[in-house]
Structure formats: structure tokens, C-alpha cells
Length: 542
Image (cartoon, rainbow, N blue to C red; front, side, top):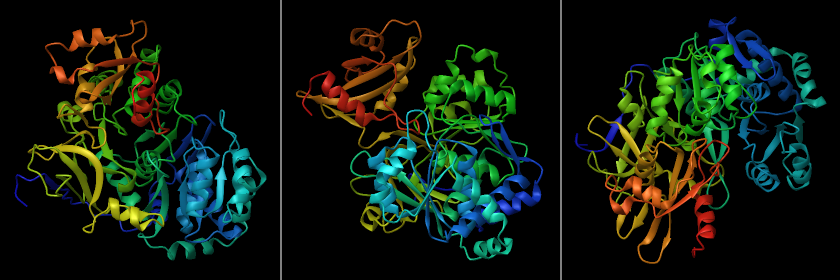
């Protein structure tokens, strides 16, 4: 491979971890038994590593007492809470496969996941906000023949599991863990596909333990760190980059609230003296916009991770300057790659951290290819980003054909993202292949236009999409969230702001001012929904 090609591999002196999640936790508990492991701020509960391991083991033995065994699928359907994390590690201990169910799902989606993965036991919150989980489970249960046990967190069966476990011989757990391989499946995560049913990305101990560990290594975590995790635990951002990064380093997992709340997050950072804070860009935007932001003591913050969607340059600068997160890291990845493939390093310049998603992670490979030919493109040219290595999923659960569409014969995962690799190996994501707008033969990348519109003083956040046009094929439409007190922007005002600064064909023809964008529960903007709504608003044909 010539030096000019868009290929890079992550050489690393630190070896890959060769143990299971349970074995890795054991090692951490031996080293740091008295340090904080888990803090559930909203519930007012905390565990040291010794206490955490004792509760995980009791729950694991309780699951064995119910007859749950290696390979059985155990679902979890709940917002962020301590029980979520206990279930994560208890299932890993005995080799059950944890199926993480999106808290935003409704009965139709729940039934699909229960049936497709063959969940045998479902642990769930009874309800949260407007979601009556118990009622939805009751509705679909008769149509889910594999589902034997429903364990509600506030119910009698959940309360009895640790007691059942403590009555059993601890040697059973030792034997169960000894029968596991790091290559065993340990987690199924359903990707929020925009068309058709979601796919269950199947991940091994080796996949997610190593990814969490090396993400933590690049954040320079030690047992002194305390990581605030307001991102959903059901997603890799929470349970891998959050929980597994912490437990593989002896750091503390801090859950600020059941779901994202900017005030609860800022309070948790202050009260728990967190050194690291996670979030998608919209979360950081909400925290920075909080009227009382300046009253919170965030001086303990050193680092953090921003991921999930591209970060506007101005937001990144504010996170560094106003939140003190001087070592904040940008991560890029996808569920199918456990998730992180590229990451910025603490020593990277601010410019690198605001304009790229970093370099390839340790022990991984990335390349940028021409989507039509599959050939690696020269550095500086756009193409599809592919990644290969320990992090690539085992496959989509019981869907070999869909697996083969995503992972090629050489085990490269095709991400569907457009990227450019520079001469130093830094990768910039320029958009989704499917998000690229072709206007009159010109390839337009929404990210570039969004970055420019973020410089408008009245714009809080902006998303750009393509909409049908009879003359040019597609036209640009900007959805804009305004800063508090600002007058709504018109299309004419946007054109005036862009004139002479953006090429004419990059200036959005349509502008739509909104309070919020349609979002997934992980904080990603749903541009598919925006396009559908735009067709209705503009009375355009699909």
C-alpha cells in the first residue's frame, strides 16, 4: 500500500486484552476494592468496587438459579439506572447475551426484538415518564414464545434474585465464568435502521471490552477518574465507552439521571467532582445554554467524549473554553464496530479536534475507498470509510445475508459514511453517502454548510437536508434552532448572510425555524423524518 493511499493502521505497544468482561472486572476489584465503582446520583446510591462485585455476583447466581445459562438472551428495557449496570455485568459473568432494548421503543418494536433475538428473560422498568413498559410487555408477551421471565425492577422477582443467588454455592459462578471464551457473544444491540426492521449487531466480550479499554486509554483514564455518563446505557456510548472504559481502569461510573437533563448533568459533575463528561453535541449545546451555567463549579473536568454526530466547531470551542474540558476527545464509530474506530488524542491541537474525528484507534485499520470500485483512494480524496480489526461485530443476529452486505470477505466493515483522510492520517467525516445532496450535478455536503451557518450569531443549531427540485434534482433546506430572544431567520436573511461567503449553489433555498429537531434516543438527528416533514411543509412530491 503506497504512502499516498487513504489507509492507516493503529500500531500500539499496549496489547489487546484477552479476557472476558467478568475476568477483567475481577482484576479491577482486586486492585481497587475500596474505590467508587458506581454512583447513581438520582437514586442517591453508590457502590465501591468490592460492593459492586458482590451485588453483581449475587445477581448472576440468582439468574443461574432461574435457569438462565450461557448463550441465553437476556433483554433489558429501561432508562439509565444502577440496576441497568448490575444486569450488564451479571449477564457477562455467566455468558448470557444481553439484548439492549431502546427505551423509546413501543410495543410493535419491542415485540420484534423479543421475537427476533429469542429473549428468554426481560428485565425492565415498570414505567418511565409517559412509557408504561409493564403494560406494553403484557400486551406482547403472548406473542413471544421464548419469553419465560419478566423481571420488573420494582417487583418481587427482582428483589428475590440476589437472595436466591446468595443461597447458592459461589463455586457455581466460578465454573460458569471459566466456561466462557472472550470470543463468545455477550451483547446484541439493535441499530436504528431508517428502512425496514432494525438489525441486531452481535458483539463479543473481545469486541466491547477492548474498545472500552482503548477508548479509556486514549482519554488517559486511571483509578482517579470519575466519568459522568448522561448518554443512554442501552447504546455503546453508555455501556462500552462509559461503563467498560471505567471498569477496565478502576474509574467511577456516575449516572446523573435516568434520561438526559442538562441541569442534573451539571449538578452531577459538580457534586461528584467528575473529571470526564460524555455527550452528543446537542447535549453539550443544552448544557452551555442553561441560564445558570456559570454558577456550576466544573473545575474538576479534564476530559470527556463528544460523539454520535458531527460537532460544530463553535460548540467544541465553548466546551474547551467554558467547561474546562481541555483534553476533550472526539470519537467516531458505529454500533457494528463496538463502536469506536477513530479518536482524537489528548495532545492533539484544538484545530485537529474541531475539524477531524482523529486517527485510527489502537490495533485497528481504516481506509477510504471509492464506493463504486472499492479501491482505496489517495489521501485527500473523499470516499467511503471502512474499518477492520478486533472491533468488527460477529454479525447481525441470525441474518447472514444482511451481515454480508455490511462486512466484506476481507472482514472490512463498510460504514456508509463519506470521509477524507489527510496526509497525517486524520479522518474527517463529510456526511453519509445517503445524505449527500446532488444539486445540478454538484455534490454538496451538508456538514460544510452547517458549519458555516453555525457562525451566524443568532443560530443555536442547524441541520441541512436535500429536498426534491424539478430543475436541479435537489435543493438545500436548512432547519434552524434560534438562540433565545433572537428573531426567526428567513430564507432571504440566510441568503444575505451567505452572499459572497458561500458558493451560490451551497446557499439553502429553504429555511425552516424549529424549537427542536427530530432525534433518536441516542441524540442523533433523524434527517429521514426531516425530509418527510419537508415534503409536507413545502408541498413537494416525494
